[in-house]
Structure formats: C-alpha cells, structure tokens
Image (cartoon, rainbow, N blue to C red; front, top):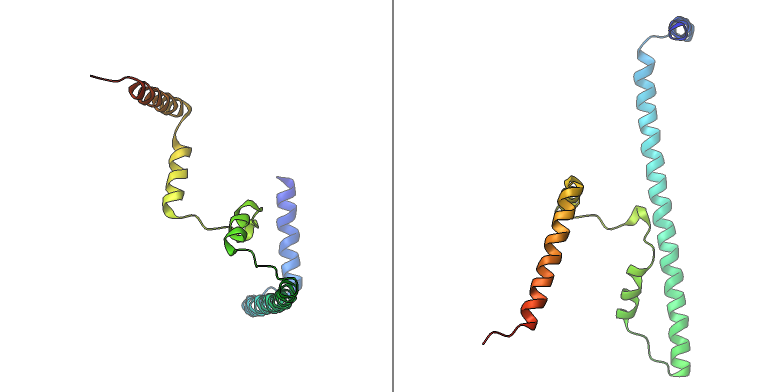
Length: 141
C-alpha cells in the first residue's frame, strides 16, 4: 500500500515536470501511428522483394535442372509426388491452414465433453464395432 502511495506522489510530480498538458499526447499518438504504418509498409515491401528474389532464383534453378534433364534424357518427376511430400513437412505455425468454422465447432465440442461422456462414446463405438463384426460372421438362413 505504501508503494502505491509513493508511486502516485512521484508520478504526479514527474508529469508536472514533463509538462503534462494533453495536447502532446494526441500528436504523439498520431506520430506513433504514422511510424507504425510506415514500418508495416517497409516490412511488406521487404517481404515482397524477398519473395521476388527467391522466385527468380527458383526459376534459374529450374532452368538449370531442365538443361541437365535434357542433356541426360531424364524425365521430369510428376508434380503429384511433390504435393504428397508437402503435408509431411513441419508447417510454419504462422502460415498454417486456417480452420473452418466446422472444425472449430468440432474442437469446441470435444473440449466441452467431460471424461465420463468420452468414455461412454468410446464404449459405444467399440460395442458397435463388435456388433458389426459378429453380424458379418453370422449367416442367417
């Protein structure tokens, strides 16, 4: 409690020394917002330049690969193989696929279920599986 009172007293004196009129705060906010917009724009431009650089590099590499394929009469692998490999890699958490509302609802529903309900659902699914197995083995005449 004493620390709070001391902070209040010192804080009021500091704001008086700084010239605590409210006009500068609005200007500071506007300047800060403008600087933030400029910073975001610079980041976006840098990212675009980086992507363009990598795209050009990849085009050059692909051209070199194609020259080698032509030289040694090698057929290009199918694109499907590359697409199958992509999901196996660890995705960047910032670039992950956004979840659909259905997926979010299903996750929320799973979280809401308590342990007893989960156990009950597991037992029901196991019983249904056993029932289908038994019906498949039994032949009715």
